[in-house]
Length: 412
Image 1 (cartoon, helix red, strand yellow):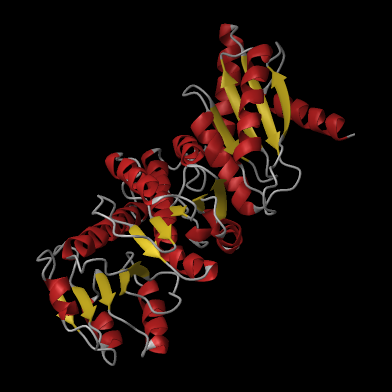
Image 2 (image 1 turned 90 degrees about the vertical axis):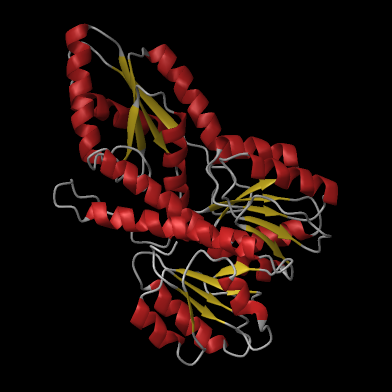
């Protein structure tokens, strides 16, 4: 960590051991600052992270500090000890369970990995020898989905509070949650009420033992009994109203969504800028070139090729990108696709006749219907699917025109 830069610590007046706890990790140089001079310290030393104690007497200063830290690049970590109020969207909570320095070090390590990833992306994006890649400029929270698990009285209100800020994938049981985790990209988990301590312990243990989920933000809500240590750096215990829980869950979810965005950007850079960093699918220009070559090659070899066009009648930006990312996971390695400006998703099935393409597209549409989240709660989005297959005198343009004609006939 020390190679990333120093960590500024702002201790609170009510917890003398706070700075010592941060320093006890012995993994980073610590610079201590007060609330009156922390802004100048951030400007002066350009820290890798800022850790603050209780800000209940300095709420305005804290929000100003958060706004200052958010403008820094690469990503600068802001961690708030035992937050007393609603956190800014970039201030990661750290509840002081057992005053454990190892937990703080693990939380900081996980966040600094995101910083390293951001620095790598920025360096490679500005490399003149690499193709240009346009990074999304909107809030990463717009792309985020949280898995909400629960069956108690808190679940409906928490679903609404979270759903106003991000996509919510609901699960009424641990078994249903496990299924979603196996098929969806989620940016965090909120574990609501209605489960025994034994069930919660078993679930957290399974998450900690699976490398795919170990760094996911996990928000355990409501009053919980004593919990043992889990290998989950972003495990948080959050009490209060559903609104309190949702607002204080945002920073961890946002950080994970940002990390996912950076990973997609790196893949796009590695692919020479041919992948859309928002979706993981081909850019429209790259798709057009690949599709043209695929049609010419299929005609020359006499092989099959089919195309499907997925159109959602009404779909918000978040759901549209979510659908594209889901399709990118469902496609076979030989297939390719793009998200078009008209909000449709076009998928090319290589070496595939119309009958098999119809079967594959039907399966994809069924999964999209069950997984893409609309603006209205519990409303599933049903895509319209048009199909076309390669004919002897076809070109890439005539196949696309036939797909559009199929959509118009279906609409009429």
